[in-house]
Image (cartoon, rainbow, N blue to C red):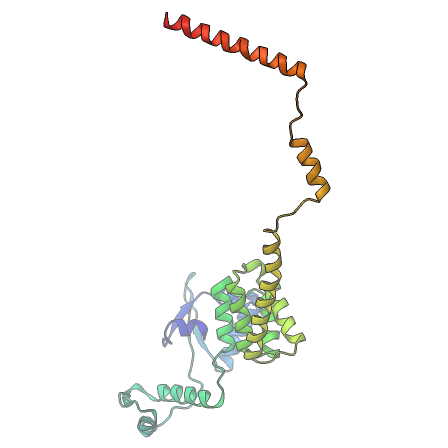
Length: 257
């Protein structure tokens, strides 16, 4: 159904068996058994082709056709006078289902949405990730799992660490008895605030200038202060400076002459 949806619900479509195996996470041997069983139950029709060409698939409608006049009877309720009865009853059924869903359930996120979001970030869930996803979806509503995946994407979690990251987030929520999207969002905000508060002291500490004790400062001051020369050393230094000055003056006179 996911592949047929991407083809805009074409009457027939082709897809390789390897693609279906990859997306469904089942082995090739089990795939052929499942395909034949689905056809026997009337859920799909398929026909093989020669060579290495992909098989042709068709998904029969699993609902009864509504009478044409049922479309007319709902035009006024929907406020959409542009609906043409020639479109067919399938569109009417789709719109009725959507209206009913909005009235009965505000949660628009489905299991398919969760899988699609995972796929958009890290590729189609493999045989390890899919069972855990199914288990989470049985325990929590799809919008909560969808939000957990969204958090992982915002934190730039890579594919190799996605399952571990989500496992920590979801198990943490389950321990706190979180069962609604509003509770999950509040928990995520509180977590981000705690992380921000934990980073602030470290940032401030890096700007703190460490002061030395008084005795150490006195020792450093004494070490930096030059010691006075004795009278003998001072006289020797003065004589040396006088000789250097005299030699410098002689070189300047020779240069000018």
